[in-house]
Length: 127
Image (cartoon, rainbow, N blue to C red; front, side, top):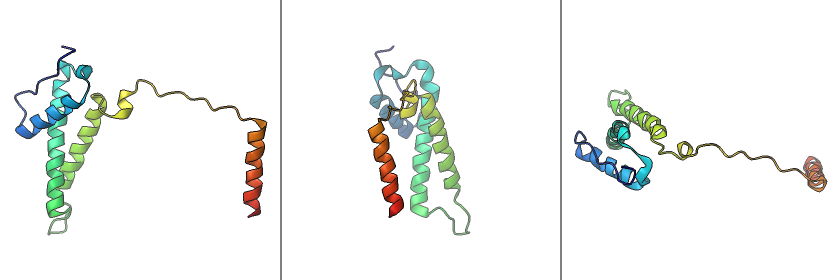
């Protein structure tokens, strides 16, 4: 299974199926396993919902004629939050793909570098 891509489940709509295929075709082959299918399906549903909500907001604006915030705004917010949460679980974001943050130690400053910094501070104070 590690060398084959997952197939989209039959429960997805055509737009969700396209989102599924876009996702699995742009990630490394072994990134997903069969137990990831429910999360991937939810991510695809949220993607399509966010895109539809964004299109509605672009077409009709964020505020209705009655002066209220469009329901599409809430749908967009909830869908993008779902996508964000699932992206971390599915390792779709850069920070979730790193196992550990690289630890960097500050380099030692030479006496000459310190002197140059101190002299720079005096020059700025004089201006």
